[in-house]
Image (cartoon, rainbow, N blue to C red; front, side, top):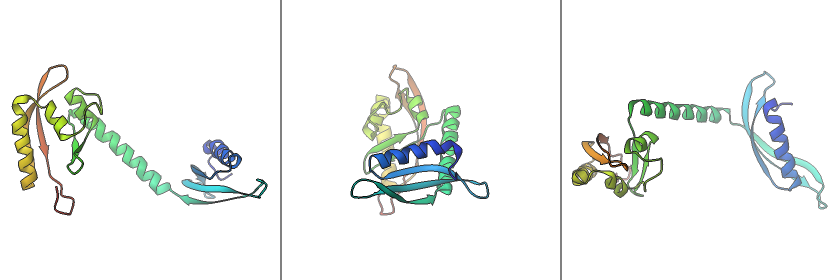
Length: 183
């Protein structure tokens, strides 16, 4: 009766399936407190069985995860707002983990480059291949200088989209050290 009415059936079904299969279960669901407040909980449990396989009891642990759930929802809202703001302003963002040479682009940056999300090999070299051939050396020198000096970089360059269109972009970046002296 404590479980939120919308979550009762799925919680019941998951526990029943776990008991039938004699395996542990983990659930996330809402409860209604004695004061009428809705809270999110995480439950982990398992059946305790006799040697003959008869269910003797359920044991487990339940913890309140409401604050975490609220933080996750706030983060999702913030990410949606950032994505929408980037879409409206045609502003993309990126993050380059130099140690792994992995680049993460925002969805809007993919649109600016005329690519579907995750369509290119997300490395520095793959990025340079999208830069207009006449601008590659300039970009490469600018990036290397910024890494050496740990200075912010501001630059304009052209890209060639897959359909052959050339676009001029303004870029900016900042080196963030990992605390060990590496950018």
